[in-house]
Amino acid sequence: MRTDLQSHPKVVRILSAIRPHDVQTVTDKFRVIGGLHAVWGIFDAHSQDGVLRGYTPGLMDHVIGWDGFSEAMIKVDWLVFDGLETLSIPEFVEHNGKSAKRRAEDQKRKRNDRKTYGSCPDDVHDFADKMRTECGLEKEKEKEEAMMEQEEQKEETVAEQEEEAAAEEASAADEPGVEDADPGGELSGASGRGEG
Image (tube, rainbow, N blue to C red; front, top):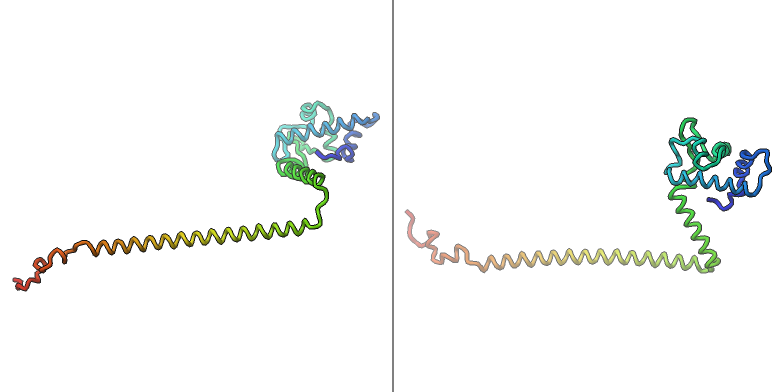
């Protein structure tokens, strides 16, 4: 919820719509803010897109405990009723939902960092550029090392395969073959005798 909500013109208009003839007090203004918080909280808890089906202005008033509040929100365009049974909040995703919460948390963290660390030193941009460059160089170096390691692994695999092939050839040459088992050539018919 915005920190300047109490001075927002729409809050003043809602206050005027709810108590047009009475004198408004500071308490009334904070009650309006509480009502807005209640309505927005219901949407945040039960809707992902800012649409609540099955809700009417009267039902929403009943849920938050304030008759006429939904109609006052409708008059300032903070709530839309389709005339049947659906209420919606314009620009819900911008102000509510996960991305809005993340933006708000980031904004708060940055604000706190600025308070803690004060203004940035003059050389902060140089430092940031240096870090970006160093990080970039480190990543490039890591990529090159990884590629070199892959190449070395490929070369080792090829060398191992070549060694295995050479060992297989050597063992095949050492094993006695048909020619070695028949030194005189008798089985092959080369004994000098004529064939039949």
